[in-house]
Length: 215
Image (cartoon, rainbow, N blue to C red):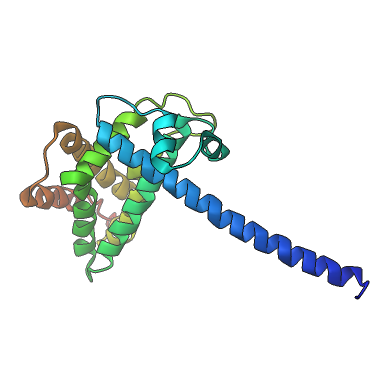
């Protein structure tokens, strides 16, 4: 057997890295189970009672130790759930926008994708998570993410293509208006009609700031 310490360190490093990869996959799977279980329990409870950590870990088939390995509190889990939902929505909306060849079509797809969160079962989930997020008053080092800011970034490019003098600012205005209406639908228990979606998209397209005329 070789006594070369460099060779030995290489083997040890490979084994350690393999163990870290396997452990990382396990941890990722456990976090996903906790997030999915939290969403399901919140959906079942609706806006009547907030679930306890014990309810979530039971639904996930995990232990309290597993929960606190990743989250210092239930509030931290709710924040993570909001972030997860925002990322999923952003991916969905971006995919829908990619189907459109024109900037106007992309804006309309964006509005439709955001307002889809008020439809049927999705609306029930959205309402339940937001209601639980209302209990998050102070989470050290974090605040609940604002989905409108994350999603607004998708509008900057089509707004620029449509001639906006300030695409980022116009995108933020459109996002706040659309998410404001989404909140009305979610908390009011209604769903936007196709005509509602069209009118909101028309409003967003009208609010593009024209470029200043040349002096």
